[in-house]
Length: 191
View: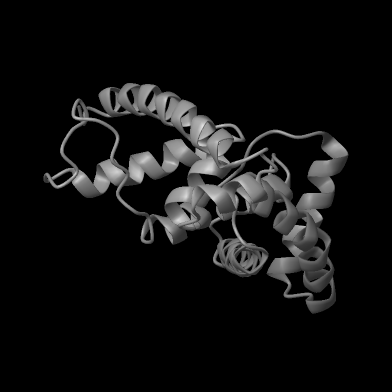
């Protein structure tokens, strides 16, 4: 499999890294692992509002998946950056990890029944839509639904003036979520 498009020199560096992985060059693999680790953890804790320990574990799993894909011949050349490929794996692992822990979000009677046959798929779409939203909505909804924080705690974490500001923001975010979710469910044929 070949991945994306990239400048020639960067592609050579990434293809050299792939060659090092195939050759099982432990020193080069460790350097590669260390090079992206902190950047990955910072990005995933901020973007997906997850704990640092979770991001570190997801990084470990993502790096291992990338390594196995290279060693097993699934990836032979790369035309995007290895970093982009690694982060893409991390994104999917993040969705998969938290998909199982996701709560049911009650939106409105106009939404399809989540207890129906497609309920699990709908909840997965809800999860993806929430995490694709821009901050502060993604973070706020994640804190409320996945981390089970109350409005007072969210106000403190998000640096809002008080609990009422957090409630108002959540209400606004829920309206945005509903609009995006309805569009996505219609697009996916689930509504």
